[in-house]
Image (tube, rainbow, N blue to C red; front, side):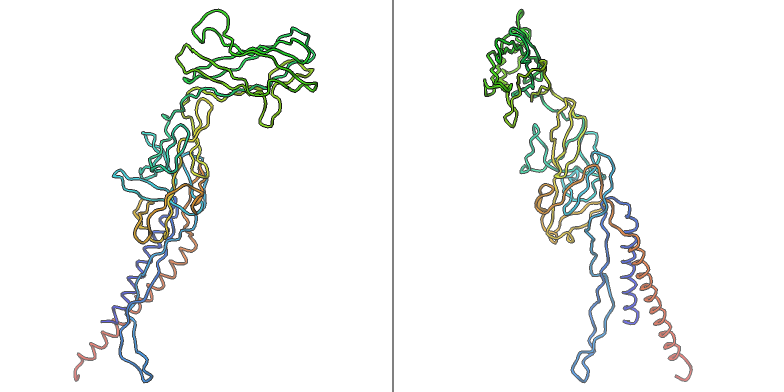
Length: 416
C-alpha cells in the first residue's frame, strides 16, 4: 500500500545517500579521489482525477536517487619530493593500461617505477605517454608505456662545434707562444684532446695551429696538424680575421669512430670576438663543445607539459618521454572502475588525447600529488541532513503502522 511504499522509498534513497557520504569520508585521504553527491528525484505521480477547476489531483509515490554527481574541482596539491609523482592542475586525466590492454583514466598521480623500469600507477597499471627516441619526442605517435628505469641510456654524440674564450697577451714579444687544450668526443664517445698553439709573429698578428696526438690516429711521433693559419687583431684587440668558423677535420681515428668535422667558432652569439688580444696575460677563460660520451640515467624530473627530463651520468639532460593526458566532453559520464580509475562511456564521449597544457588540458607539477577534494565539514553537514531525513521517514512508517493497527483493531472489535 502507498502509505508504506512512500516512506520506504525515502528510507531507501536516504540509505543510498548515506552510503555515498560514507564513501566520501572513507576516501578523504585517497590521492586523486573526487567527492560525490547524491541528487534526489521524485517518483511518478498517481492521478486521482480533477478538481472543480479541472486541475489534476495528483499524489506523489515517493523519492529515489536520480543521479550521483562527481565534483571534478581540483584537490590541493601536496609536494612529495618523489620524482615519479605528478599532479594535474586543471582539466585532464592520466592514461593507464591494464595487463590485458584495456585503457583506464585516473587523477591519482602517485606513480612508482616497477622492476622493469616502467612508470606505473598505484594499482600497477602502466602509465601511457610518448617515449623519446634519442631525446626527441613525437607527440603524434601512438601511446606507449613510459620507461624511467636506471637501464635508460644516453648514446654518445660526436663533437660538431667547439669554442674557447681566449685572450692573447698584446704586450708579449714577437716569438712568444701560448698553448691551451680542449677535449672533444668522437661518435663512439671516446675523448680526443686537441692542442691549440698560438705564436706572436708581429704586433696584432698571431699564428695558430690545432693538433691531435698521433696515437689517436694510430700513429707515432709528432702530433697530427689538423688546422693552421694566421689571426689578425685590430687596435682594440678584436679579431678581424679569420671571421667565420674554422673547419677542423679529424679522420682515421684508431678506435674506428666516424670521421669528424668540427666547426671552431671564433665569435659568440652576439658577434663578439671569443679570441681577443689585449695587454693581459694569455689565458683561456672557458671552453665549450657539444659532444659527449655515453651516459646512464641518474635521475629525472617531470615538467609542466609532462616531459620527463632525464639527467644522465655524462652530465647531459635530455627528454626520455612525455606523459599524455586525456580530456572528455562530459566528465560526469565517466564510469568509476575502482582503484582510483575511470572508464570512458558513450555518455562521456571518446577520450581526446594530447599533451599537458594544450587543448584545454591542465598542466602537471612533478614531485607532487593531488589530494582528495572531499571537505569534511560539508560531508558531516550532509550526514546530519540525510540522517534527519532517514529518521523522519522512519517515523512516518511507524505512524502508518500505528494507524493500520488501530484500523484493524476497530474492524475486529465486538459489535462491528
